[in-house]
Image (tube, rainbow, N blue to C red; front, side, top):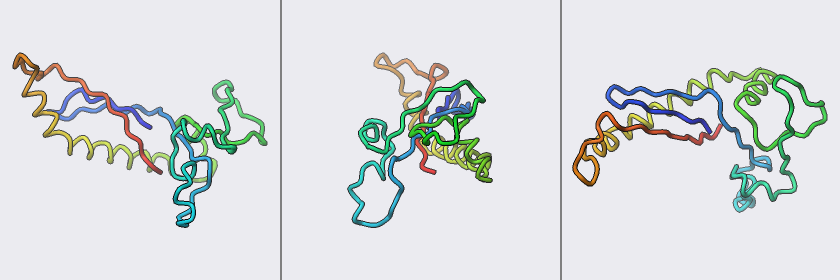
Length: 143
């Protein structure tokens, strides 16, 4: 999950947070219909996966410190941990993050008319919110 601050819609000005939360399902994905009801395979919610026997809580360690090789993979990661995983597995984290940024921008552009309309409509007293709006969005992206 990435958080983003929109400080202006006209012109569109967005600050993307480069750190965020990565939640992992506790069961390997399968498209087989017999597993359609397997919540811990299809959902990454902590409230669901924490009850799975395969759930692995995070082990705290100092930034940059390596955990022992036999440490199970935790069910929640930071973007930094995901970036390290991509690097170790020769995957393109920066390319993926650029595609996420593109998705966020397109979603905000799609919402722009409704948000601008709400800002112009104003509060119950009819006072415009123009220049006084601030939006914070969280995006859940499946990778």
